[in-house]
Amino acid sequence: MTAMNTTEPTLPQVVCVARARIPTTQGPDIFLHLYSNDRDNKEHLAIVFGEDIRSRSLFKRQSPNETQQDRMIRGAYVGKLYPGRHVADVDEKLGMKLEFDSRTGELVFDPRTTWDGQNDTLVRIHSECYTGENAWSARCDCGEQFDRAGKLIACEHEKETGIIGGNGHGVIVYLRQEGRGIGLGEKLKAYNLQDLGADTVQANLMLKHPIDARDFSLGKSILLDLGINNVRLLTNNPDKIAQVEHEGILHCVERVPMVPIHWTDDNKGIDSKEIEGYLRTKIERMGHLLQKPLNLHTTPSTTISVPNLTPTK
Ligand SMILES: Nc1nc2c(ncn2[C@@H]2O[C@H](COP(=O)(O)OP(=O)(O)OP(=O)(O)O)[C@@H](O)[C@H]2O)c(=O)[nH]1
Ligand SMILES: [Zn+2]
Image 1 (spheres, rainbow, N blue to C red):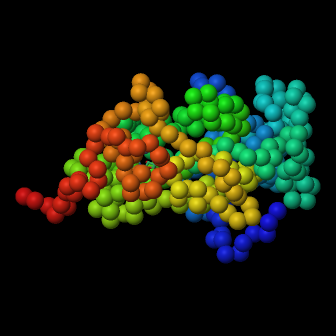
Image 2: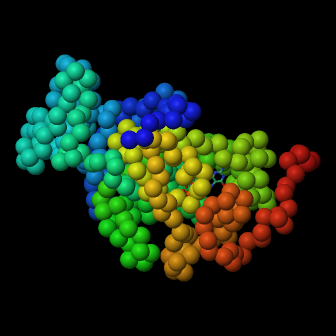
């Protein structure tokens, strides 16, 4: 492994507080990991595909007195829970056993039971979007991208696009930075400004926020805690690609594009005037790596009349 560059900023400390298996309506079980950290009080998440992708902080023995029952309740178990199971570190039915360093209590890496972090792992670092994920919003593509990331991680290969999937291994890091970090209340104000003619960048600036207030360093810490070093990143955002790199320990080995579904299938995906404006702004003003020539019914941003924020009577 290359030596770590000391000029890199210190990464946040994260601890996985609990994980649980979630059977899904989409097919595979996922393991939801909830994290605490030393930078904010938000509950950031990792949606993990693959039982063997193990959080180092979760699996570490909490104290010599920690019971096997305590460990199962926190989700620090190998294999699968079943009624009557007593031991967290051994799944007798599946023939799996974890080993721990007797001095530090840390999980000892064993490729038979734990995913190898040198594997190229399909990852999405996703920022919260209440409207796109829960309110069926056609203003943005967040809900669609979230679903698609899950499908791509679960599948071996996507026929329509030729994308190699994660084949059941991968992670969606879900960061609670709503509205590119400005929060839901401010995002709703930005939407009103957009209805008045501003684009997403202009609206943020008019509200005296940065164009993008996000910080992906928590996402990096979470990936490293999950033992992942080589990432195939599902994104069109060049800033995310740059931010995910951490010299010597975390590499973006490939960018996997997230092409809007409606661009490849007229009958599917989000089709609205608002989403076109949103994508146009991402491409023209934020440098997103989407290549389809824009043939949209929204007006290019240069001709948008920006509303005046001075109150009128
Ligand atoms: N301020 C603001 N935020 C928005 C708006 N529309 C969506 N968002 C937020 O933008 C973020 C989108 O996050 P992602 O989909 O993870 O990332 P991205 O920058 O679009 O890049 P990709 O990885 O290519 O999808 C979420 O936090 C949304 O809540 C908007 O009009 N204004
Ligand atoms: Zn959204």
